Length: 292
Image (cartoon, rainbow, N blue to C red; front, side, top):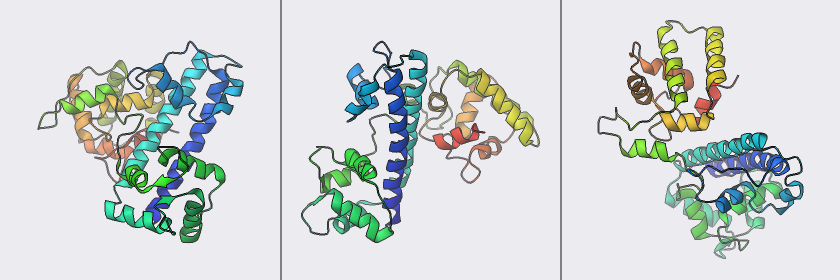
């Protein structure tokens, strides 16, 4: 099934990006750097996330110490992980357990009850002409081979395609609390919103006042907002969204909280982020909107 190849490709593509960032972090890393306690339970978990299975990354550790730049890189690494997790969760929705078992049996051609590197490479190349490098296969195996024995068991394979809770959570503690406190009408959430949320609310207010949105004017507003914000886009998204998606209700709640009148159809604004599915704006849509 092509969705499986797409799934593996997503892992490889995002892991390559993470590896590049990790190599840069190693060069600027400082032992005194602080970690986000809302994401990592302790310093060891934080270090494992930055340098998993990569002793070679430590060869240049602290060669050019720079806490400020290192913090920026670490935030980029976390955001890349979040994007990857969101993409994989969406792709998993296209498979049921029966299909997952069928795929496993297709890969395990000798019916030994395990998948090794050779079987996986052969499956991807023969079925879909998908060329994988040794590095790509390492990325896939590191993710799926939980007990690190060099084989992917049936339980590990099924777990990968059904387990939705990632090491780096989809939502921050604040966003989870807001989701749990959501009332049945889904129009009220628990504050507080961050200062950047207020700036975003003012940004949305400017958009709703524009009858016909001009691209040049929109670009100018985006630049003004980006210049003012202090949070990462990921933290901002998590603070506003009631789940892994952002929709018109989230914008309504945000505007209400800051006592800003809703003067237009908020779905029109949501379509600027995701024209095809305005009530399911994922983090990637949100990030793409502010990328120019």
